[in-house]
Length: 202
Image 1 (cartoon, one colour):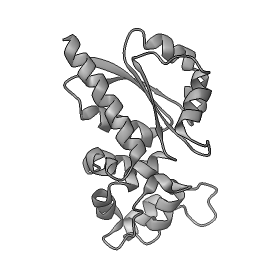
Image 2 (tube, one colour; image 1 turned 120 degrees about the vertical axis):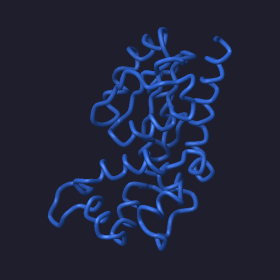
Image 3 (cartoon, helix red, strand yellow; image 1 turned 180 degrees about the vertical axis):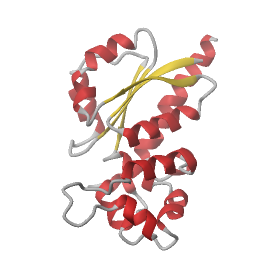
């Protein structure tokens, strides 16, 4: 079993990363948490993560946002240098909320059976805004957590992260979500390959 240094942009992405590692808990356990607000911290410290990957697996999860495609983001972050074998950089297209929206079972449990969930969330230009739009028609307690109050400068409600991290821990299924999210499917394949590599070493 290896302790994995997990780097993410925010609390929600960290919960998703922990859930993905749990699919291989016999070989991969979350250890060091590398998180500050946004992707800047992760990108600016790529040299440190490369060095850390010489000693233990490092998994970074970031949003694609407005960058054209995942290969362009990877090239930008790595500066054209080879990626160390133990450094996994996985990209949510375009935001980690797309990975949540891809599990229709979990999201309908949260938003209600009448929620019209996207068949291809990776194709959404702004998955978070799409989720917030759906939340406006959700049951009242969910709506109050997710949707910002009138006049607020925030894009989201005060309970947004707490409500969605609970969803990830309790009912979100990476396997179901990967059926509708190619970027999540790629992330799961990479983690599966890392777990198999560690299994062969033991």
